[in-house]
Every structure is written in C-alpha cells, then in structure tokens.
Image 1 (cartoon, rainbow, N blue to C red):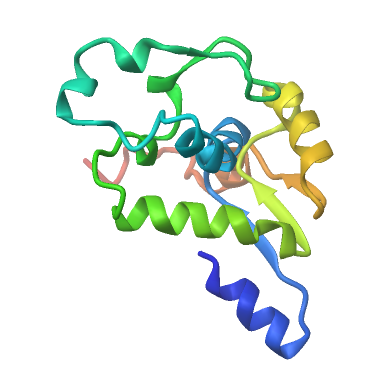
Image 2 (spheres, rainbow, N blue to C red; image 1 turned 180 degrees about the horizontal axis):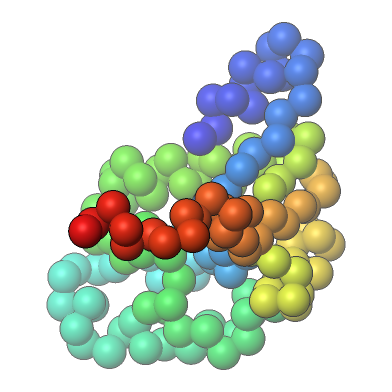
Length: 149
C-alpha cells in the first residue's frame, strides 16, 4: 500500500514497507512499467491466457534470467488496464524508493541473485525475514492432535 509512505512523510516518521511476497515477486512487480512500455501488459484479450503468449521468456529482468511471463505475479495477468490491483501495485512500486526500508518474506540463501539485483536498484535497504514459519515452531504443542481426540 502506498499511503503509509505519504503519511510517514507528512509527519516526518521513517516507514518500513513489509511485503509478504518473495524477492522474485517483488522484482517482477518493479518491472510493470517496463512491461507496459514493451506491450507485454495488459494482455490484448483473454485468448492470451491460453495461446502460448505467457510462455514467452523474459531475459531482461535483473537476477531473473529465463523467467516466463506466466511466472510473474498474477496481477500482471490482466486484460483491463484499469484493474485496481494492477494500478495499486504500480503506484506502490513507484513509491517504494521513498520508504526507509523494505522487508521481504524470503531468506538470502533462497533468492540471493535477485536480492543483490534489488539492492543495486533500490534506495532503501532491503531486509529479509524468512522463513517466517520457523518463528512459530516453538508454538506447536507437544501433541498437536490430542485436542482432536
């Protein structure tokens, strides 16, 4: 959401943006303006979902060589240029450089090449907090099925 950045700017507070997507999803989202410029989105019509267009290999996204269009976040797969989720994503990615920090739900060893590319592209520092499931491991009862009894 872009509005916390505006609010933080207005009151002079730092703003860490937390994204529950992977570094790859974030990098893909950062490419939307270029995707529009190259005519890759919005899709011309619904036939593009099944005619092989989404199998096109994209080789220009930093840290993501050989990715297919279908592997980009699903907000890319639209036919309506006025799609609210698409517009919100584009606006958020346009403003993310104004954040004090970016936090992604991944871990360095999993997406190091993409994280390195993002670090060279973004102004705010990037932090990873994954795998988040490990934070909950100590919350599992010793016999988790006992209550099912």
